Image 1 (cartoon, rainbow, N blue to C red):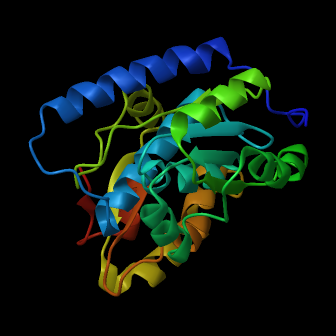
Image 2 (image 1 turned 135 degrees about the vertical axis):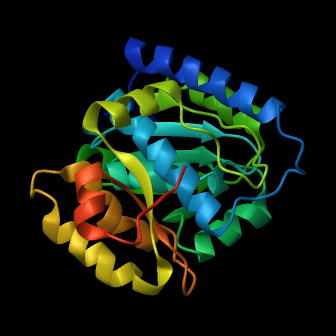
Length: 252
């Protein structure tokens, strides 16, 4: 089977940014001493939002693009959700079957397969039609990655994240620069008023503000919030003053 159209080699800019992100993430995690665990709740959403910012910093649109991530627990990093919200497709090669099943039950994955043929078959049409999709392939890493290389399957971005520590990764430098450029800050919408505030933010955003609209409209599909949990998003200082006059809580 030939690799589907649209599964192509890395862009040099994306690869350069990826290398910087991985080095930054590794430095951050080396300083942490907490026991490795799967991210949950608000910390998972926080990491997903930061990965989404990283994707936005790399390129404006991810429709028709493939992101590959590999490693035990790769499906639980929030990356598949971030890529789907950005409009792209994800192939997560993850041998941790229990974690994959848990993420799938929570809505964080669209499909779970156990062979590369199945994964490519599922991804092919969605990539061609520029539709978002996340697929987890539960199989040993080395044979799958070797098979991908042999068959010429290439991603637009390869992003392998360190094992979770229970705390979200810090913003990558390019993501922080992108947020600063737009005047955005991470903000936590109070859980008791979450739905009303989400609606108020969406009503205020320009119709062409795709990144922020997509986030607020789609994140709940992939990560169901617990009752009373806040919603993280990006707001400018003026938007915070107008929408959250006495309640604005900057996430970081």
